[in-house]
Image 1 (cartoon, one colour):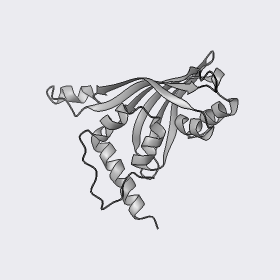
Image 2: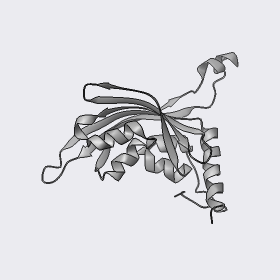
Image 3: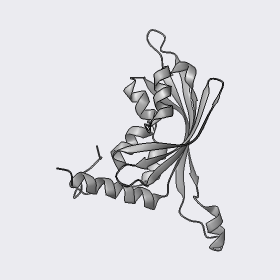
Image 4: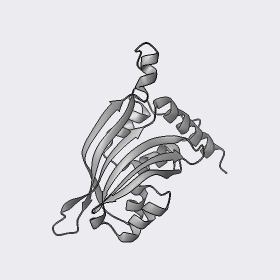
Length: 183
């Protein structure tokens, strides 16, 4: 569900959508759904290294097929159900959605937001003038164990790069327009 309806005054924004998303201690999947509606993942590259499943993927907004985020995930498969990993490998579902679907209790740890520039070569062509910054984050997803110990163990190490703010704003408007046109 989108976070507010078309025609409503948007809440005052002190930060960009990208900066806000990158700085939250939440799984990215529900936040992307709130801002951009339905999404899907396209795997760009994957490999197995021992118990790690390494995946490079891009997340797209379903209604526009525009990219929203690029991610690299190193997933510790020993701690996850085999059919969850199989679904991750063979579908367009987002890892965060699978964690939610399987009812795994998780926590975000070691969150490190960062700023980057999408295309520094183009910036150099413009005489060194920098393009607008983009935002990303690195984090660890921990699984919270069951009582009485509630131990925490790493499930995934993730690096996420959101696309530029103009593209994020355009995707957000498309989601709001789609919501407004849905009976």
